[in-house]
Amino acid sequence: MARASAVQFSRTANAIVQNEINISIIFNYLRERGSAYRAQISRDLTISAPAVSRAIEKLMERGYVVETEPIRTASGKRAVTVSLNVAKGCVIGIDLLKEHLRIGLFDYSGVMIDSCSGMRFAESADAPRDLVREIEQFLDRAGTRRRESGVDRAPELKAICIGVPAIVEATSARLTSAVLFPNLSDLNLKQILCEHFHVPVYVENDVDLSALAENQYGQGRRHHDLVFVEVSAGIGAGIIIDNNLVRGINGASGELGYMVFGPDDLGRTSKTKGPLEQRASTEAMRELAHKAIAENRPTVMAERARSSPDGITPALVCSAALEGDEVACEIVSSITLLLSAAIVNLIVIINPEIVVLGGEICGFAGFETLILDPIREAVRMSVPFQSPEIVISSLGEDAGVIGAAHMAIETLLLGKYPYRI
Image (tube, rainbow, N blue to C red; front, side, top):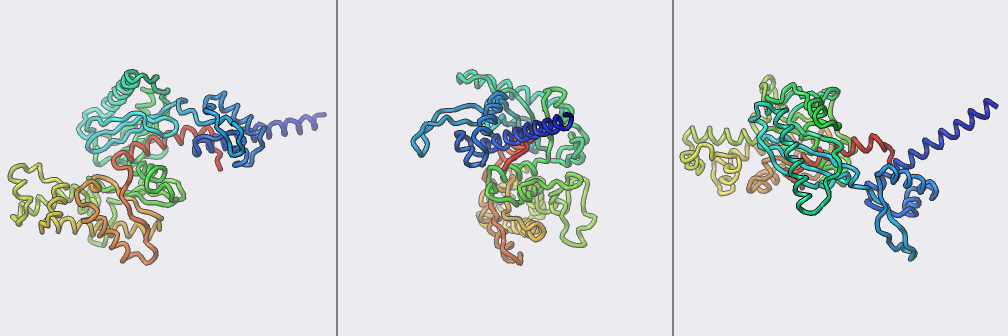
C-alpha cells in the first residue's frame, strides 16, 4: 500500500508542476501576442483544451489576465478572448541622465502611462534624498493628472528600476564607479529606495538598459545580437547576445570609453575618462573647439565665444561644420575617425547583426551627413566580412527609461512565470 501511495503522490505532484508550466507558457504567450481565445491558444501551443482552460482560470483568479470582447473566428463562431490585465500593476523606470533625470510610469504591458523630466542629479548635494523626493512628486502629479482626466488611479506600484551612468556591482547593486556622478559613488540606491517605497528595486547601467530597450522595442527588435553605442559626455556600449544582456564579471562590460588604440594610449586612463572619451566624446568636441579658438584659428565659432564662452557647444560645432567651417570640420572629422575605429573593433570582436547609435551626439544638426555616413563607410572598408546595419536609435532620449521599465517588468513577471516557448 505504501508503494502505491508514493506512486499516486508522484503523479499528483507531476500534474501540479505541469499545470504551473502550462500557466507560465500561456501567460507569456499572451504577453507577447496581446490577446487570444482559448481554442487559438490550444492550437498555437499544442496544449490540450482542458489544460488551457484550467490555466486561464488560474491566471484570472490571480488577476494576471482578464476576459475581453468576444470576436468572430474564421469558422464564424463567437469566442471570448483573454489578454494580459495591464491594471494588475505598474512600474517606474528612471534614467539618471547627466543633464536631467527622466522618469516614466509603465503598465504591465510596457506602455508608458506618464513621464516627466526632473532635476540635474550632477548638482545634487544629497542624491538619495532628492531621488526619493522626485519619485514621490512624480507619483503625486501622475495621480492628479489621471483623476483630472476622469481615469481611475494608476495600478499599484510593483517595482522601480534605475539606470545609472556607473558600473553596478552585480550582487549588492552598489555603484562602484560613477565618474559623471561623484555624488552617487559607493551608494546603494537599491537598499535606500526599497526601504522607502517597499517594492523591489533594480539598478543597472544606463547604456545597458538602452540596449535592452532597442532590442525589445526599437531598431533591434527583429535581431538577436546587437550593440548599442551611446556617445554623449561619456561613451559606452550595451551588448546583447542571443537576446541576453552581456554584463561581464564586474558588471563593466561595454565600457567603450576606456578602449585604447595603440601603445601610446596605455596608461592614459584617468580617474574620470578613458582614452576614447578624452578624444571623441561630445565634451571632447567642446574642448577641441575652445582650444582652436584659444589658438586664434580662424573660425565662425570665435564670434560666439566672444559673446558667450558658454555658447561653444558640441551642437554649435556640428552646425559650423555643416556650414563648411574648416576648424569645425576638422574637429568633427577627428572624432568621427576615432568612433569609427572603436565601432570596427566592436564589430570584429562581437560580430553583431546591428549596431545602434544613440546619445546626445545623434541629436546634432547634420549628424547623418557629418558622422553616421562616414562611420558606415569606414566600417564597410575595414570589416573583412559582411558589415552589420548601423542605424540611429528610434527611441531617442526615452531609450534608458523604457529599458528600465522593461527590466523591472521582465524581472517581476518572469520570476513568477519563467517558462515560455
